[in-house]
Image 1 (cartoon, rainbow, N blue to C red):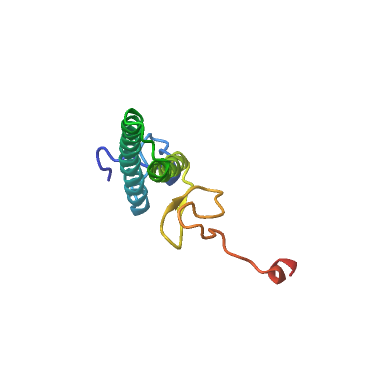
Image 2 (image 1 turned 90 degrees about the vertical axis):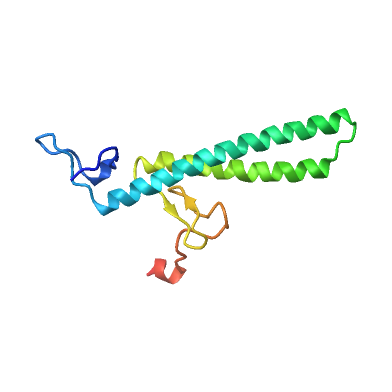
Length: 138
């Protein structure tokens, strides 16, 4: 059974020899929902970053015409913008990787991470299990 408008992941199987599509599985639906959520989050973050940039420019302009530049205020606003931009970059990376079926979430905070990441970009916790040297030396 196929659901109209629902895209399937390539890794769930190739089309059959008769040209039919592979069966839609629960895993496929979960992957599609996660990808949809990531795309929605990317769109929200894109709008947020644009708004923050606009506001920052307006703030600098207003400070400049009044000849009262307050660096501490600008630094706080820039920090918020950088955080949103970093999250947007990570979501975009994950979306690119989702197409190949590689990505995950941090076990500590649940933030998405890209393949190959050693530490969570959000909380800084290690993403790979720690192995003792005794285990390696065997």
